[in-house]
Length: 56
Image 1 (cartoon, rainbow, N blue to C red):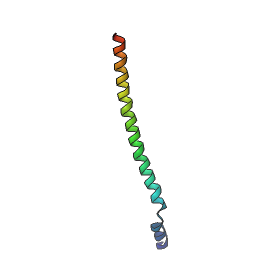
Image 2: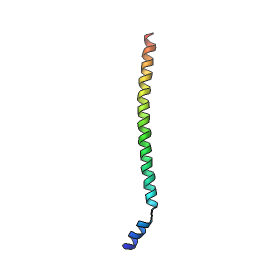
Image 3: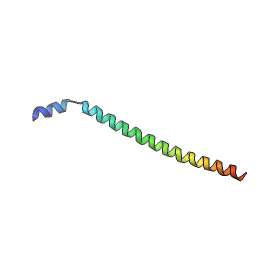
Image 4: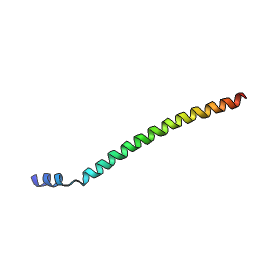
């Protein structure tokens, strides 16, 4: 049992995978948040322009 614990302690390949997963999750949250924010603002701008065109 102690040999297995020593092997797992020395083996750091799993840490690399976990770090990549965390970085990917953070990047996805940032991208999704940005797209939602830009999408909402773009929708408001296009609606405003459409209403201005319709009133003229």
